[in-house]
Image (cartoon, rainbow, N blue to C red; front, side, top):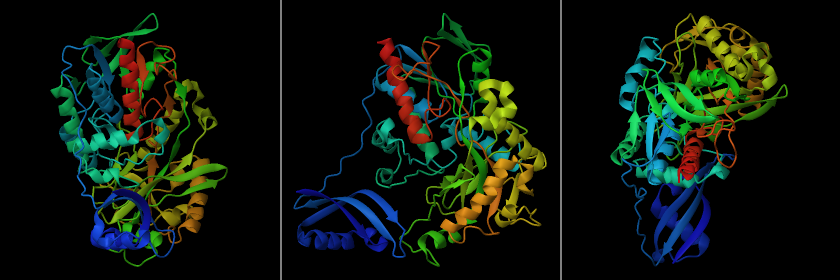
Length: 518
């Protein structure tokens, strides 16, 4: 027989199957000798009290052996000669749209401006070491999108948008650890994700799909309010009546193109701020209320939300045991992001700390119409580049110094490889953002005593939290509200906020697209 229970145990018991059996036997009055196996379905850590507990959802096999069922990929068929769907972008939205297109019996043609995962690494090295930004191949652009080299976090609150578990199981089928099905806040790790992305690409190609790298789309041909073709940077033209647009939140050239062609787009609120680095040991001490983190506990994350000056200020994309990376997509700008390896074993942790922005905040850029938020975002990134010395060195300030408006006399080395320049953050941000951050960090310290320390370093800016533009689409057909055959998709179109939600949206757009072909 099988039984499902929820149980709360110590980290030591959660990590030891024999001890867990004993605990389950006692709490649920099951004969110990009859328990054959305990399958962990979900796991989360409760560190709210001094005595840390692990919450487990388990399936107990009593007088019945456990037989593990391998996760299998869907049945794909050869689509080499099937009807075609053009997909622009090979991030999670584009790749999962392509997979779903193959699964449904149609041929995806994926056009990606960047390089494949292996060749992207040279350009990441160039920005870290030589401060050279390749506009088509960087932390944001290239196979797998922004998530490939920035951690692969899989947690999403968007459970109403689609089948989260399906996406997780697909990732496991392509090589991810099955622990992502169990953990409350799963992540894959930047060191593991590229191989999984490559496996997805190989599967698409194996069954007749096409993926073209270093292929930037520069124009859309529209006839009678319907997509008719796309033009590439090299001058080639691809005739098509179906385009899934999954270019990501940093494809400013696409937003510019849509605006220029009078294709309807909208300004969208987003959030912007800084990335703060602490020692992981300090965060563990604060969160776990201990001097030294125990061997059965993972590096601790944190999540804080505050209302400051009538605005939301919150942590974003927190990376335990991780590093800060340079994520500019054009020369003349500085952008930060964070990532962790699969073991989260770096000595530092970092998190974006961002301030909620509203459409009225972009009034100084209203001449750009729906691109006002994008130009506001861009202006701060360019100001950070100037303040940092016109290199990829990031403007930085010790945390307490920032709250007091003091230029830091010196800066410790951080995980940000291109280096730091001591800057007062008021040189980078408008007053309302700077003052909100100053007050907000003091409020953070009331929730996490010890968070506000001058050993922590603020890096600016964290600006690519989400797209500053929404590309409107019909709720039912998912087609653009103006252009037939154009399917705005994923994070860049304003309909997702991370790997999982983007993948779900990619699948939904593929389904909607091929339904009209049928």
